[in-house]
Amino acid sequence: MLLTIAFIVSFFFAMNIGASGAAAAMGVAYGSGAIQRKHVALFLCGLGVFLGSLGGGEVVKTIGSGIIPSSILTIKIVIIILTAAAISLFAANMMGIPLSTSEITVGSVVGIGIAYQSLYVSKLLFIVSIWILIPIVAFAFTFIIGKWFLKLKRKYPQVERGAWQKSFMGLLIITGFFEAFSAGMNNVANAIGPLVGAGLISVQKGIIFGGLFVALGAVLLGKRVLETNGKKITQFSPFEGCAISGTGAILVIISSIFGLPVPLTQITTSAIIGIGTAKTGFYIWQKRIVIQLLKVWFVSPIFSLVISYSLVKWLLDSDLYTVIAIFSVCLATIGIISLKKTVSDEKRSLHENGGGI
Image (tube, rainbow, N blue to C red; front, side, top):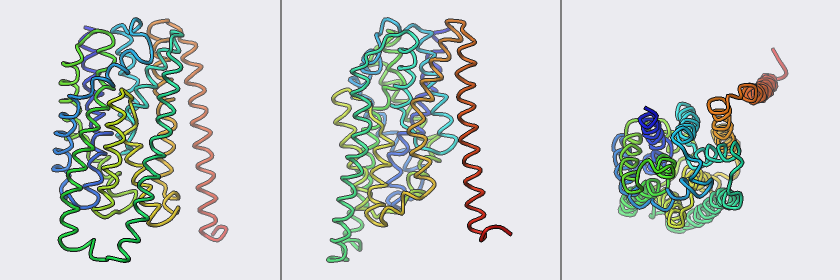
């Protein structure tokens, strides 16, 4: 019964991975108009994800035994890890926020490691440093390309018209598919890594089944995230879209070869913001959707860590008092943040109305 539950939770998580990270990979091609219809973008994304998952074995090993010892990965622990990660990701999908599945999965695994006081700290610190570095690289690279392209357009306006535009449209679809491929190579491991680490399934079978369910999730559940990444952050030309997708794909594939779980959605979104900053300046950072993304990225691994740690204390250690204390602190924190937001909104409203009615 527990084995069945573990696989159900794993495949449910895989579908949510498809909705969040994988669907965001084709958001650029959709947002720039290279692909007009959502279902076509999501189908191509699903196909790319499945093919990429077949090469994701190294990342599977990292998730399964590179952060905590595989000896503590029982069926119950695997269920807790995947449940904590799935809850976090499902909540983000409902908000239409492209969330890093790597961050929440690693956060869930770290929660288990803290509960059992068994954690490979040096490996974890290295992974976190990569999380910080790679989005910065993506932002800087696309910012530079964006500035260069603006100069090119002033000198040669025809690069965005006629045959040039059609060529960039075709290239954008290819780079978007390439990015979806990289998503499969890196993100499928988040769903099946714990199963492999516990010895419940082999690496080869895991990446095949995991890839199928991630692809299915992209096709069926990815519409909101596709819309967020494609339309709500900034508008971009086909050439700029190629730069965004190509940057994300290259960085993620390189990371996957070395077995590093990296935040694909953060890389892609950082690249989009880099292009937007090059075009409109830092005004784009004032957009509410960008601020919301940054907040969710910061909170998501902590949120999944708290959930997995609390589930261990509650279900396995029967320590209900610790769980109550943890969630009391979390609720109090959320309440304070909500209160500050309400006060801030009221002040903004009064300012816009000239000090009141």
